[in-house]
Length: 425
Image (cartoon, rainbow, N blue to C red; front, top):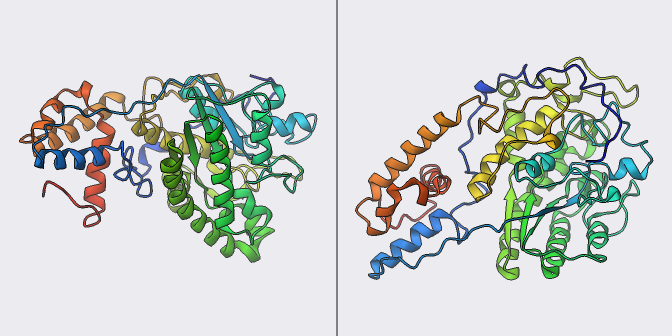
C-alpha cells in the first residue's frame, strides 16, 4: 500500500465506533434487498426452487442439477470516482488534493473506502492507486463516459483505456465499477438514461476484452449531500428524481447485459443502505446528517466526526462507510462471495473492526447466534418441503446455501402476490 501523510484526525483513537449504539440499529434481512430481485436470476435459489418444481411435475428427480460457483479471483480492477479513489488525484496533484491530513491518506474521507474493505474481505488489493502501479484506476471527480471531468480528472472511459493499453482482463479478474453520482452533481440536468447507457458501454467494453464478473453499486441519493443542499439547492429535487430514475434503469440494464454478454453482474444496493441511515440516524449512532464534519475552508474538524454522516460536502465519513460495508457484506455473502476478516487496508489508525471472529461486527451479534438463527430458518423451510424428493438432501447444511433460502422466504413473505409459488404453500 502506498504510504501517504499521517492523519492526525485518527491519532489517539482507541475505538473508532465506540460511540455508536449499533446493537439498536434496524435489522436488514441478510442477503435480501427488495430491488435485487433474488428470485429473478437463473442461479438464485428461488429460481432453482421453481425449476425443480417443474421438473418434479415432469417426473424428473433433478439429479443432474449443477450449481454455479464463482471463480477464484486474483485481482480487483477498480474504476470510478472519489468514492473509490485511493490516491490517484492525490498523486497527480503532488499531495495537494485532498489535503492529507485532515483527509485520510489521499482518500476523500477520513478513513478507508468501501472498495478497500470489500477487497480486504476477499483477500484482494484495492488500496494501491493506478499512478503508484496498482489496479485501482478511480479518480476523484470522474463521471461516466470519456474525456475529462469538470475537475480535469479522467472519466471512467479513459480509466478503462488506461488499463486496456497493454492489459486485458480474464475470468480471474473481478471488476468493481462505481460511478454515476458525479454526472448529476456536475450537470444537474443530465439524463439518467444517458448515464446508464454510458455505464453499460463501460461494462460492454470490459466484457468484450475478457472480464466475466462485475460488482456494480448503484448510487446513493446525492441530493442530500451538503453541497447540493447549499450550492445546488435549486436543483435538489431534480437531482433526487434523476437518481431514482438512474437506479431503476441501471437495475434493468444490468440484467440485460448479463444475458447479452453472458457475464455475472452483482448489483450492490448502496442506495437502500443510505436511505436506512438517513431515515433513522439515531439507531446508527449519528447526530448529524446534513452538515460536514470537516470545514474545508478552515480545515477544522468537529470533535465527534464519527457521529456525522458526511465528512465533507459530498463524501461520507469512515463511520458511515463502515456501516455501508457491513450491510454490503451480507449481500456479498448471499451472492456467494467468501468475505474474510478485514486486513490492514480496511483499518483506520486505532480502529477495531473485529470482523474476523464476528460476522456482524456492527450489531455485536455473535457468529454462533447468527448460525443458530439461520439454522432455525433452514429447518423450518425444510420441514415445509420435506415431502419433495429433491429436497431430501437439504438436511445436510454443507450442501445447502442458507442465504438463498433466506432470499426465498423473504421474497415470499414480503412480496406476497408478486411471486407465483409453484408448490402452493
